[in-house]
Length: 227
Image 1 (tube, rainbow, N blue to C red):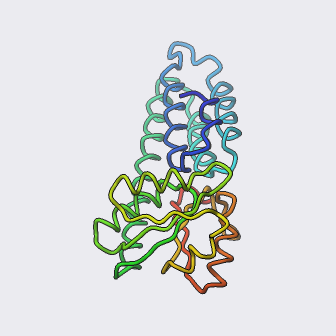
Image 2: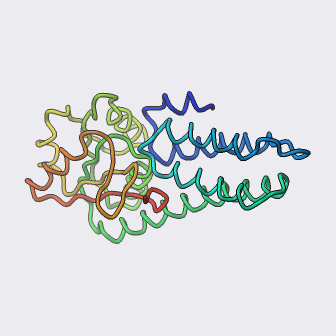
Image 3: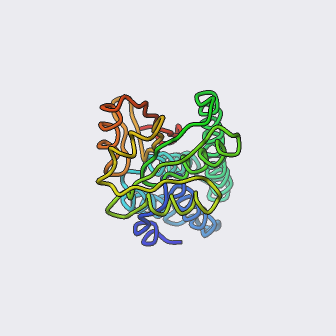
């Protein structure tokens, strides 16, 4: 995958995008000329900027690129940098995986009995959590709507149904009816800070409907998404 493909990826979740970006960085790191290290910092800076611009709402990309560039600044030896940078990227991906497992533990503590859970768009973290909750016997049904304009919700519904989960699918205009039928709402996040959460268009409308219906809403977000 290259940066252009990353830019045109409108269906993957933030963590999936981050894994793909990590692969692009790892490929470039492998191509470093150990003999000279010529243009190393400028090449990685240029690539890092392109990666961030390709998906500017995805906070993990900022954090991943920043860690690699800082390692480049601190190391004057190309071979030493290659080893440390590869280790940084691998460690970043390990932390992503660990964060997802921590989210699942929190959800298992939160949901004690079979629940009907509504979600929106397609978050890989939410998908994995729903699958695990279903295996644990505390998920009765998943409710999704289209998530226009890219219809990520349609893809998520198909994935979950193919895995054997009971799924009800709604058009976006029936979002209120969907929320009325659920016990709680789980959404993903592209990034978050102390003041706000950024996710796919339509998430705000869903949370407002849930507030009106007095249904709890939880955002599942790993720490690398924090800005």
